[in-house]
Each structure stands twice: as C-alpha cells, then as structure tokens.
Amino acid sequence: MDWAWLGRNLDDLALRTLDHVVMTVLAIGIGSAISFGLALWIRRRRFLHGPILAVSGTLYAIPSLALFALLIPFTGPQSLLAAEIALVSYTILILVRNFLAGFDGVPPDVVEAADGMGYTPAQRLWRVELPIALPVIVAGMRIATVTVIGLVTVTALIGLGGLGYVIIELGYRRFNLTATIAGTIGAILLAVLADRGFVLLQRVLTPWAARRRTA
Amino acid sequence: MQDASGAVVAFEHVTKRYGGPDVAPAVTDLSLVIPAGEICVLVGPSGCGKTTSMKMVNRLIEPTSGRITIGGEDVMSLPAVELRRRIGYVIQQVGLFPHLTVGDNAAVVPRLLRWKAARVSERVDELLELIGLEPGQYRSRYPSELSGGERQRVGVARALAADPPVMLMDEPFGAVDPIRRDRLQNEFLRLQEKVRKTIIFVTHDVDEAIKMGDRIAILQRGGVLAQYDTPAATLANPASEFVERFVGADRGLKRLSLGRVGDLELIEAVPVRAGEDRAEVRRRLARTEELDYALLVDDHDRPLGWIDRADLAGDGPIKADAATPGAPTVERATTLRDALSALLGSSVQLGVVVDDDERVIGLVSVDAIGEALRAPVASADGTEHPVGETVA
Image (cartoon, rainbow over all chains, first blue to last red):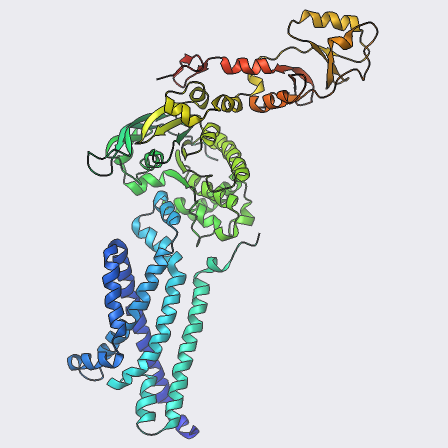
C-alpha cells in the first residue's frame, strides 16, 4: 500500500465517493418513483403485469456494457443521463416486483375495512396500503441499492464511475494497486452501510411489524 | 356515551343483478323495514344474497334498482365515502389496521371526519372503556399484540367511534371458537342495550340469528325474502317449507331457548316445614288438583325436597328427613330449554322456582312448558297465529 498516495488523494477520493452516492441515490429515487407508478398501473390493469415484468426483465438482462455502448452515441461521452438510464433500468425489475408484492401483501380484509370506514381511494393508498406494504418495499430498495452501488463502478467505462473511476482509471490503467484497493474497499463500505441503513430504516418505519403478541 | 340511537333503515324493492336481464338476480325485489334501534339479522344459506344486501346499505355494492333509505334519506343522495363514515362497519376477519395502534384504529373515522385532536383522544378512551379494554393498558398496543377476542372488540369500537346511527356487521363472530363466540355475543347484546343502534347483522348460523336478532330476515337463493319476523314467530310459524327446513327440525326446542320461566304462570307450591301435622298438610294438598307432592322447606323458605302422599299417611308431625331430596331449582331468568332439561333429569317432573335469595316462589311443570309452546305467537306485525300455521 502506498500510504503517501492515499494521503495526497484524500480529497479526490472523497469527491468520487460523493459522486458514487449521488449516482446511487438518483438511480434509486427515480427507479422507485417509476416502479411505484408502474405498480399502481398494474394494480388497475392486471393484464399489464406480464408485459411490464417482461420488459423490465429484458432490460435487466442486457449487459450493462452493451447498454452504455448503445446509449453513448446518442448522449455523448461522460453522460450522467446515459449512466442513470442504465442504472434505473436495472432497479426497475427489483423494485416493481417488491412494490407489487408489498401491495399484494395487504390483507384483503384490511382493504375492505378501509373502504367500509369511508377512506377515499387516495387516502386508502397513502394511509393504509403504502404503510403496510412498506417493509416489503424497503426490502426491495435495499437489494436494489446494493446492486446499484456495484453497478455504478461500471460507469467508469463512460468516464463517470464514482469509486469505479478510482478503481479503473487511477488504479488499473496506471498500475496503481493502492488506488484499486482503496476504490474497492470504498465501494464495499458503501454497500454495507447502505444495507445496514435500510435495515435500520425498516425498523424505524414499521414499529408494528417488530412487536408480536406475547400473551 | 352520547345517546344517538339508531335510525330506521328501509329497503324498497331492491334488486341487484350481475350481468344481463336473463341472469338470475343476486337480490330480488327485497323490501323490508328495520325499526330504529333494533338488530335485524339477515340469515340464509350461502348464495342467498345476505352479504350483498348488507353491502348495498353502505354502497360497497350498488343496487341495480330500488332504493335504500336511512332515516328517510336515500343512501344515493350522499357521496359514498361520506355515507360510509356515518355507518359502522364490522367484518368477520375484523380488518384492523396492523400498522396502527389500538387507539389509532379506534380513531380512524373521527379523524376522517376531521375531529379536533382533543375530542378524538377523549372519544378513544371512552370507546375502549365501553368495550372493556382499559385505555391506559391498550391504547398504544398494536393489533398483533391482541387476542382474537380483543381484536374483535376493537373492531366494534372502531365501528362505533363516530357514533353512527346504523351498524353493519358481516359474520362478526364467525372466526372465533364457540365458547368465545357465546361470550362475545352476550357482551355485544349488553353493549347494544346501551348504544341502541340500528344493526344489520349477517350470519349463516340460525342459532346465532335467533339469539342476536330482534327480527330475522331469512333469505333464500337469489336474494328472495322468505320470511321477516321475530325469532319466536319465525320458529312458531315458518312461512314456507324452505323456512321450516332452514330453521331445522328442532325448531320447537329452539323456541324453548327464547322463552324464560318468568314468562310462565307459576304453579303454587304447598310448602311444609318440619314438625307440621301430617293430616293438616294432607288437607292442604287435597285442595290443589294437580299436585301430588308437598315441598319441604327450611326456616328461610328454601327448598329441601319433595314429600309425596304416601309419606303423609298416618298421624304425627313431619320429620325433617322425610323429604326426597333432589328437587331441581330454576330461576325466573332460566330459559325454558334449561328448565325443561333440569326437569326431565329428575324423578319428580316439577321444578322449584326460586328468587335471588333461593326462596320458593312457585313451581313449574313439564306440562306448563309444553303449554307455553302451544300458545299462539304474535308476529312482528301484531297479528297472532296458532302455532304451526303457515304465515304467508
């Protein structure tokens, strides 16, 4: 390990880490919003279930490398747009499935009771169904986030990459093992932090799921 | 507890069809009036449209034709969600919101109606007390921490929260075991005495219908009303062969559980104390025509046992140990069913009716119970019919 190099490049490493986080948060945020919309659409029109999952499954199956190669001619190099289109595509399959599983997991008697009490459809969604579906949705976001943190490194190929840039451009291309190791450990730490963070978030958001009857 | 009692609910020629006019309706031309503050049980086999009929009241299902009014107001005249906030709703699986505490579950409708926080919180405590769950202990628990019976009670509290004049209950006690069901039913009947809501109660269980209903509406396939009357009148005079079969071959016995000993004219007992003269007791016994037994009682008029005519032969005082013990005792509140059961199990087919201090107030016989079953029963419309006559 070249500690001196590390010391000199601490600022750059921090900046790349921040990039990494921003790209991940963007992808998960946009992916969740799109998936939420798609899940609601599928709930209304059940026949869309197959086609939407097929499309998102296909997107998921395209190698990330190929997706960048296809997008860059349209967006130009170092395009955040190209990177996010790819990253978001990968989150959608995981997130749509979890949104749907979350909503499907709301007991029908609870939905019937909500209607009978006089909730409007919107009130029912935001105050009853979404909170009850939350543990499953958050579980999906957890998997998607860890996946995206890994994928962001690949965007180094189009000149972005966050910590991936450190691994490939600073490390691999310049035969600097220290940079490669630093970038790798950074990415792993981010993934672990995100994972633990979501576990914590889940516990905070759903106190009712943790407590069980003791009597 | 505010004293907002129920409102009259009326079905007027209500029909519900799924599909075209050539498909048999789920509910056919249903007309009935449920008086304010009464429990009307909709009962019938599966597919009889009882749940469909109930759900048309809060418009979870909308009728194809006909109308339903609450307190004279057409349910279609309000937006559906506003209507539903004014009607209590209890379902079999309870449907408590698992992510809300007991207190927040009970507060659901008041909050939808935008009550002030202080009023909501006060109301929640009042409701929890009403259903017998100590607010301090239960308010902040989650449904997953409650027993099945407690959940069902919270479901009732949630339905009562905004003090609606009308409550709909869809097999509310269907998912609990028979012993707990009996307890929940009794609790609910006591609660109803306080709140006096107009209740539409759906069940497939005839016994539950007889127990809970002020009136029962028996529906048959296609939502056709087969009979609408008090439980006693329905059992005494089934309107059709369908009703007769549906209420069961043991409907005579079922009627027994509706009647109470206090409803009968009691037979006067011939009470005797130890030490009384036999000849004197013989004379007193001879004055009654129906009795073959005198009743030995203690100094507080509590029954000790029967003394038959043979024991009274000869002269001298009656001994304290002369009585045959084992006279069944019943109270005024005992159902005729339980009384008959006690009487049939004893050698002398007479029961001793006692008051709260166990003092003898009269006798009841198997014949008297049979007589009560043969007396004409008044229908809900006030007419009287001999038992067994078909009221069409």
